[in-house]
Amino acid sequence: MSSLATPTATSPPAARASEPPHRVHRSTQGIFCLWHGLNAERWRTLLALGIPRPRQNRLRRWSISVVSRLNSWHEFWETQCYGRRIDQTVIEHPPIFVLGHWRSGTTLLHRLLTLDPQFTYPNLYECLFPGHFLLTERVITALTGWAIPKTRPMDNVAANWNMPQEDEFALLVRTLVSPYMLLAFQGRRECYERFFDLVDLTPAELALWKREFVRFLQKLTLRSNKPIVLKSPSHTFRIPLLLELFPDAKFVYICRDPYAVYNSTAHLRRTMFVENGLGEPNFAGSDEDGLDWFEHCIRRYEDTKSLIPEGQLHELKFEDLEVDPLSEMRRVYETLNLPGWDRAQAAIREHMPEHAAYRKNRFSMDRQTRRWVYERMRFAFELYGYPSRLPESDEAAA
Image (cartoon, rainbow, N blue to C red; front, top):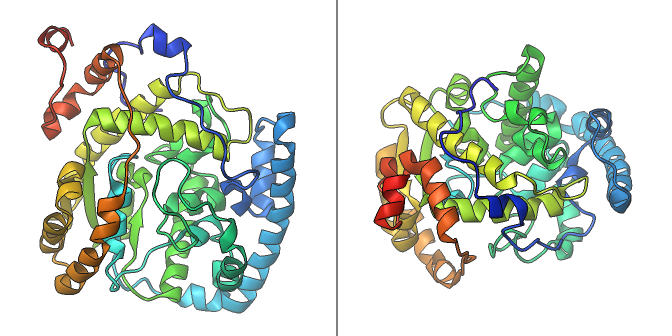
């Protein structure tokens, strides 16, 4: 991929390359996964791309085949009922994009923003079933809410159909043009590496992505005509394209201690490979791959953020937001000139007991891995002001 940053340091320690560094996650979702949001056409396309078909996942694949036909049927009737209204819907309010690498605090930031009733957001159901949620959401969520795990599989964040969710899932099932294709092709970078910043797409792929993204936002606007707050870490790679579509969009970027991001991202990848994989989980090279994209994400953001007009970008640190949400969110509203802080402040205050009670996953990191991460991400430590926490001899060698 032409825009991928070239690795700047050593390969991972040999011990990490040969042994799984984290406990393998056990599935809490059973056969259900994000691929159940595909329609029949997209499922056939995915099969034609040569996804792995291990025997132990045959029930999952069979169920996707069944549900994909139902999705196509629902999409047909939604088009009959809402198609003209969707086509005529104008996205009047510029979106607000929450940017940052995975596990940098984007979920917390998104949650705090969406507590404000002046905004709307895509929820879990709408992102998994973007093709027909206008038609089916009310009925199906009422009937199936009991089946949703109480917390997300990768952490302790509460889960339900109405929880704010990444619009990248909707883009995945509608286009197959998404870095989350790695869940179908674990270990095969050539199948998904073009889908981060989208600069190497074919004209047809780019047109499809734009069309489906805008249509998804039209449907959200038709459902609730308010500014839409979107959170997908993948969008951190796509500032030029997002500004092309929405010149007046506002952006909030969050960063976090790279050690914490690395540990949490490694756990996320293993969890998602189990919960949403179509083949046998393949963790070979996963940590190094994740660190490649961590580096590329930050470099891409720093290289393109200057395109955002003044007053449309605010940056903050996760550690500051975690300690003092009210002060940090007030700064977001001031920088972006968002109205209604008094109402938002009251909603955030009401949320504070839940925030205080939340318990993050805890991870350890050995000295060898800490040095490896620091070598690769030293520029980010220095750029964002995070200490290396390495012995002086290790820091000097790095």
